[in-house]
Each structure stands twice: as C-alpha cells, then as structure tokens.
Picture 1 (tube, helix red, strand yellow):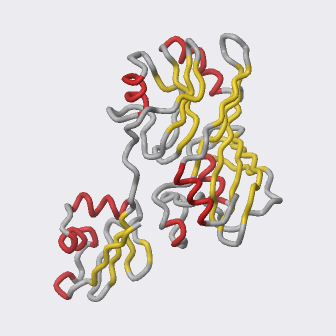
Picture 2: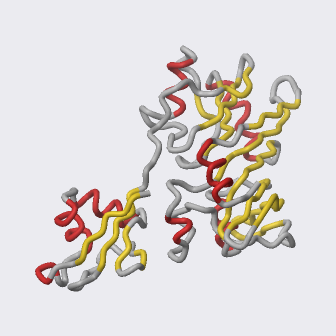
Length: 276
C-alpha cells in the first residue's frame, strides 16, 4: 500500500474534500469521490467517508492507494468437475458473473462452453470455491440445495484482534432473518486471529457482519471494519477465503468434497502476522 499526502492550502478552506483531492492529486472528481466512498482517505489521521466533508486550512489529507491484483489472466484452476458441474478456485478481485471480465465469462472461453453459469456467488474480493453449472437445467437442479441447508460451506478468515475461543457459534438477525455461523479458532495473537467458519445460513455478508458484531472484523474489510485499525487499512482486500464445499450431488447422490488452496496473498498475510 502507498500513501499520497498533502496539506490543505488557505485557498481551499471550506471546499469539499473530493474537490480538493481532485485538484491536488490531479485525478478526476469521480475518482476522488470513489476513494472517499471506499474509505481510502484520512484527514488528520482519521478516516473520512462523508460525501459533504469540508476541509480546513492545514488539514493533512492522506489517500491510501491500494495495490490490487488485476483480475487473473492465467487459466482458472478447476478443483472438480463432471458432466453437469465444475467447482473452481476463484481468484480475489474477480467478479463471479454479470461482467465481461467475470469468472463466468473467463470459464466459458476457457472451457469452450457458452452455457456455463454460476450457481452462487462470492464477493469480488473473496477467493475460493465457487460452483458453476454446465447448463441452465443443471443450475436449476442445484438451486434448491442453496435455499436449504444441503451444502456445507466452510471459510477461512483472518480477523482483527484476539478472538475468544469461547465463541463457538455466532447468532444474529440479518435483514430480518436469524443467521448462524460456527467458529473454530485455528490460531491467534494480540493483534489478529486465524479462523475457520462454517455458515449454517447464507445471508448477505454473513461472516463479515457476524465478526464485525463481535468487534473482530475481517482484516482488510473496508465496509465493516470501522475506522480504528491501521492494520486493516494496509490490506489490499478482505482476508476471507471460501475454503471447502461438501454436498451430495443432486443427480448421483455422491458426496462431493472440494478444498481450495489458500491464495498467495492470504498465506503471506498469515506469515506476516505470525499465524498458522
């Protein structure tokens, strides 16, 4: 991560933060506002994300430039496949579908099959196991399994702070529905924890929200981590990985088990934090 820094001049007193950033750093106002929205801007050491924020003379403004990995261009790793489905190891910073550079589009070209379609999705920054169907009919067959609890979904995450090993289950209401996440503490120290999590339900951002509720948000999570962790700000992405899927094949009844190896940035983060 790099930082760009400047001090507000007298002539900029009372101006909107995004406009001053645009002028001082030579970027568009749209880019400046996007940086604020992504919580990459600090004023006098405090993270600012309020669109109407006005600056004062001598305010110190910092823009955190996250060095993100470009969407992967090499061959996508297929963890398992048969005539109807394939499970791949999604790289971080790649959309699952609904984009010309998405994993779905890449797989259609890679496998020479225009019918490949995502059965479920992961957040853009989250890596790991994703199931794709090789036809629309195969997708429809599997959808009820996700609506029920027929697929075991296990994640690995690095969280901020020392997570208590007494918290085996996390429960809360998310968007009007009760949700449950099972937690196993793999390793921890004063500044961070390495967790394995199994989601019993599939609510939006469930793991990220559950950990944030316990004040141990996922490292690098710009949405739920709050404003108090420099350690989190330094991460180019949220350290969350869809580690394993276990389910019965909807056609054959065979138990399918797949594990996605941890990506390089996740392993480097573990090593830097002395977690294993």
